Length: 344
Image (tube, rainbow, N blue to C red; front, side, top):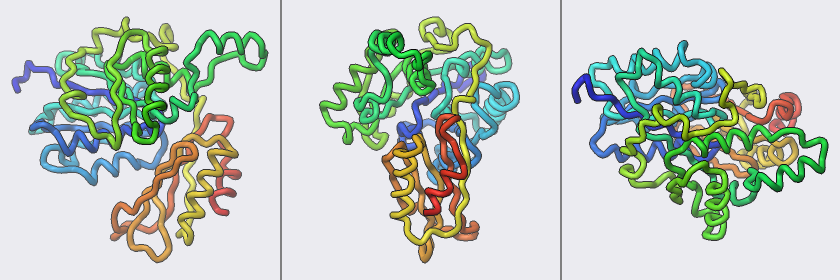
């Protein structure tokens, strides 16, 4: 690769828990001969996703090529974080052949695409494509409005519905910015669910998009990498709810980190997480759990009332501690109430 060749960048976006990290792990394990770098932007202070990916590092994507940005939304900290990070990756002795960017689940992708027009990096990298992940089961269940006319009619009939929910705006902006949509958790959605989810996305998309079902992040890397979209030059075709605004706010969402001691009953903790989703409208819980009597730490990741837990590696010299990141819409975050449920 010569210095005049732009390094392609794939932006991987998607709502909370849609499977972005799982997809990136698959791409890392199947790099197609490319030397990869990964930039992870998380909402919250505990870098769960970054640590998961670092545990998969190898010669094709060494640990030093995996960078976490935890100082806020990547598109809101362009000058402070994003540009210097890209410049550092490009200055490595072995420059990456392809860069993967995992946005936070709350990020709007279009402001990030605008950052690729910055003079410091524009001549050196290009957005190969924006890949949006959508949880097929969740979308099929109608968690985001797909019938705009029906929503408007309901708003007109109900004075309390004076604006779209923040979640629907995030979802719609991610779809509108995409070059490819992956319907994740296809095995859970089933054929009927996939068809319903596809209908929702086709209704939201401003143009015809390829929509592919995937399970456990398994997809041919040739489908995801090498789209040659040059998305930074195609912004007009990617409408956003925030077009015309210089920035956007993330005050609609909030996050707290709950620290607990060792957990005696991990099943009771998972039940408590389900309670949080159902009783307090918690969107996402993720983190590590120290289970009493177990030498390995337990990784917990929850999307709404769906909880997945697995023992991922021994604690070793790392202090045994339970730390969980809890994310919800701003007015739904009550730290004391959340802690009460988790502590049982």
